[in-house]
Image (cartoon, rainbow over all chains, first blue to last red; front, side, top):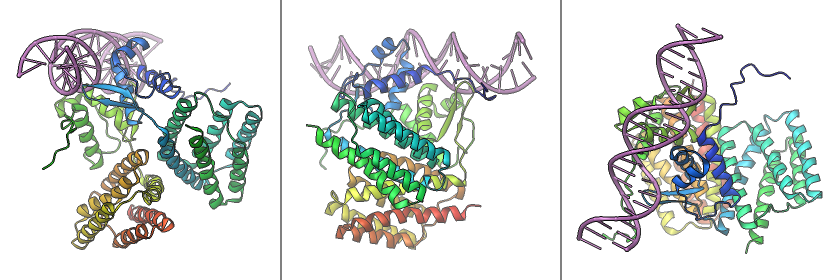
Amino acid sequence: MPIPKNFHSPAQVTARDRTYSQLQRWMIDGTLQPGEKLNDGELAEALGVSRTPVREALQLLEVQGFVEMHRGRDTRVTLIDKEDILKVYPPLAALEALAGELALGTIDPEHMERLRCINADFAQAVREHQPFQAMELDEQFHNVIVDAAENPYVASYISMLQMHIRRLKYVFLKQPVSIAQESIAEHNAIIAAFEHGDADTVTRMLRQNWLRPMKELYSIIV
Amino acid sequence: MPIPKNFHSPAQVTARDRTYSQLQRWMIDGTLQPGEKLNDGELAEALGVSRTPVREALQLLEVQGFVEMHRGRDTRVTLIDKEDILKVYPPLAALEALAGELALGTIDPEHMERLRCINADFAQAVREHQPFQAMELDEQFHNVIVDAAENPYVASYISMLQMHIRRLKYVFLKQPVSIAQESIAEHNAIIAAFEHGDADTVTRMLRQNWLRPMKELYSIIV
DNA sequence: AAACATTTGTCCGTATGTATA
DNA sequence: ATATACATACGGACAAATGTT
């Protein structure tokens, strides 16, 4: 097993990073509910670290819109409502359409193979009614396109929006939503459009592949 | 002068916020050059605060892509090169096009009046060769549309990308760039398209109003 | 109206990690 | 290879601000 020489050690994950990841997970899966008050001292004790890394993690989460900090008053998980669904998906659809457009010029055979492979697994997960697996594979499919686009500004914002969407799904549905059949065909259409260099179809399908689930999710909620 | 009742105090600006704003300004205007090493202790002394708010400010700037922190090694202003111009503008154009699309349903007469007013001032600033004024008014014009769109996810990312573009302009040109005449006409076309509810023209012109300056800036650089 | 309780903000000392001699 | 210098990460105490009794 060849190990890269510059394997700059696993970059010892810091207390702040662990705290950040854990708090984000808890907010996404609903362990920390929207509107819930966060006491940095309590969190520090619960996580076995001091207040400093907790505070730093909370500030990062504030920038991302997961928490609201009120100077001298309190810190709370941000509230969400049904309408947030209609606010989060459109920018994601727009940026993924852009990513698709950019990827047309940089995508290589290896990327294409990954797309086909992931979509095959995705189709199987849908057939076998494994909603969590399907959701993960759906995200992986889109991440291949984002990777191919080679634009860090686009990539970082897309991943942030995906985290918000995860929270919306978990909080509103309490469980992974079963993904519609249509996605499989849409993914295939996207793959074919990449093969043909058809920019218009790539962007249109990528948009649709996000906006259709948005409407479905929105219509399910009370 | 009517003062809102819930005027939650001037929100006493914290040391962290001051530090954050100041460091960001310095990175944008080139006082802190790309690649420059940042010592939190030195910065703390220079700004008259302790290391904590400096560290916190640096972490926020890291998330935004203005600095890179290497655990136990150093913290530096991120490098930029010519190609970054081609990476920053497209997502901004895509999101502004989306903002325009969303704003079509929410824009009101007051917004329209502000657009006309700002563009008139913008035209004057261009005529009188005041590039800095013109740049500010150009940003204000676009911010009206973003405000009207009422989507915080879109708004926050657009403002971040605008900061990056400012840095690119300053660092590469050493001075505000004189904005092309075309922008005035494009702004008028955007205003007219809003009046007619012409979604296609709104999105197309907003895209063009960013991508044209991108190409100009890119072609000017070495 | 003033003192109190609570929570966040800041300071600074120390520990830990990284690179160099 | 080990030690040393330096920068960042963390911890705990103190200060400031806010809302309440």
